[in-house]
Length: 438
Ligand SMILES: [Zn+2]
Image (cartoon, rainbow, N blue to C red; front, side):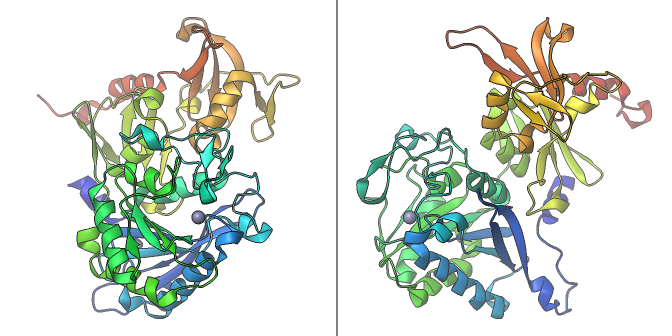
């Protein structure tokens, strides 16, 4: 019950019943991230409801600038008429996810990566759409533009973090004149695609008909339970406003039926609250964080859940920020009192924030696994850790990375069991008065 109450806090504060909301609260503009070249990526929220619907324009930059214009116009339409957003819903308008591509006149981001081929689409049960460096792009052209690894681009990571509590996502593209849902069977996405196409007057197509999309945003979103579709405008230069306004309004009017609230996960029979479950899954699941050790528990305004290799924390008050769900700083907590000498000259990348460097397999694993967002900064150098059987490890603010030289490809790095250590410590330190007698 307590978790359900906290879930209600996910939505921005609503005015008291019978009171008119100040205009500034009905709609508010936020910056959700910055692009590779430092351009802001912004979103406008309209409404307060528990269901989060996100409209994303211009993933493909300059050649699809009409989708930037479309979402900009939709944003202004609903900013001026917030009463069109039903109480069940809050809607976010992101006119461009790819401001660099828009400024540079390219389909790609500033690193030359196709942002609609870069997502980790290996989470669903369909191998056909799994992420790949080599992709098919516009007009079937084959190119190595999927990125060096899944979720490698900052724009992809901005989207990943912002959709963690979304119920629905609409990714606008041009110019095929059809609407298609996630590739892997996901009933809410199919229903959303059909409803949108019918109202907008576009053709509904169960699959993108021209080639196999890998690493697509809609496929990634649906694998987390988000109803996700891609409307393709018919032209490459017209906004097609009235058609898409009809499509969006049809979705708004049926929001409770079309957009399922984020669902809790169950791992080994243990319930995992929806935002924690999505974070856990999108950042590597059991292979990265291990399995849950206990049910989630509320601690003040934080919901905490111990996993074998992390303590994941959900702060409902930080909705729409990248800090909504984070790994607790167990690397720091479990090394209190230990003095790590910074290396005189760091090998690899030096982090001015803490004075430590990370290199080799540790740095590669850190970058690919989510970097600062997931692990924090290094707080030690590489060291031989007796508590890890003499293994070479490195402590970061939120994790310990352990090096395993075993294997044929030069070894691998995985998280040390800090969640388990902290959980055991919490059992010992729990005050007797707080224990339930059996
Ligand atoms: Zn496109």
